[in-house]
Image 1 (cartoon, helix red, strand yellow):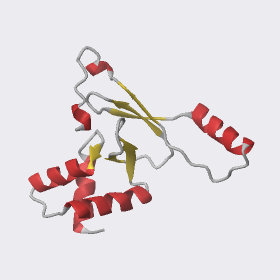
Image 2: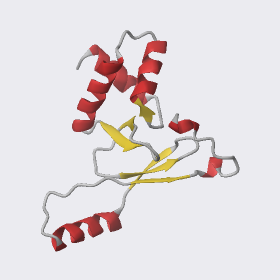
Image 3: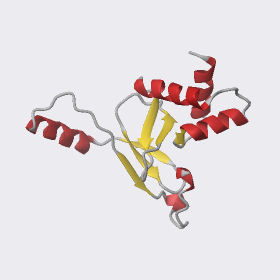
Image 4: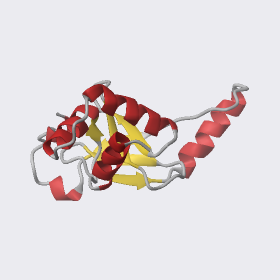
Amino acid sequence: MTKQRSAIIELLRTQNNFLSAQDIFELLRKEGHNIGLATVYRNLQAMAQVKSVDVVRQEDSDVQLFRYCADDNHHHHLVCRNCGKTVDIQGEAVEQWAAKIAHEHNFTGVTHSLELYGQCSACDDKPAKREFFN
């Protein structure tokens, strides 16, 4: 565990929403950490491989967003496209469907991820700002 990785983990533990690597880099720099953007990317990718962070793609682009993951069980996400509030959700019907499709086509080792985007009740009366996805 490097000093840089510890700083990234500690920052992510304080956040409830998904953040881009650029967001994480800027927040760490504001906190006074001497860390490079490439180091942030490298550490986030390594953490994603061991599943210590959740990774989603921004709804309308290929930007990856990261969030600390305390739940090491397979799960999906419901994300508010206005404020970024994220809820971990289970999807038994999705799991059954994926297994059925894999079986029908003679595939094994199938993996998947699913993110649902909408607007949370706190943002229901607010116009969509999409500031979460900047």
